[in-house]
Length: 149
Ligand code: CO
Image (cartoon, rainbow, N blue to C red):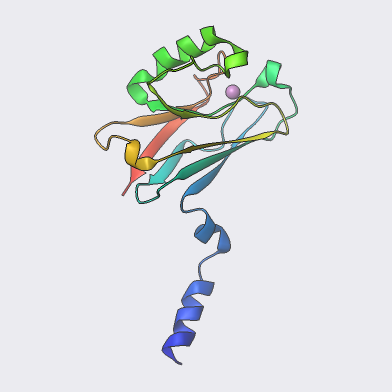
């Protein structure tokens, strides 16, 4: 077997999804007020990282809205409280909140949204989290955003 053939075989052994998902992740939210992931690993070598949110439920945004907000874990509660006060028109994120790394729009059932950020902006010494800032959701809808390696 030639080296070229071996190289082609090694490419085939990687799934297209694995190749495509290095700098992005699919995150699903549902009508039961849950995300399907509790941890999102972010490759620090990515110039840009994307979280693609899909609301797989049927309930409207006003009843079961979901978004993704990225913050330091230590800031989650305060950012959430300010976001609830900011209201749905602001996607439940206080305008100009410098504690927020990035956030997606609020969506309802059947909709999708995306949030992008540069991993280099994150402090390696800090712990980060993702959560939904719709009122009352963060208790269940949150997870760890983990920098790797
Ligand atoms: Co939600």
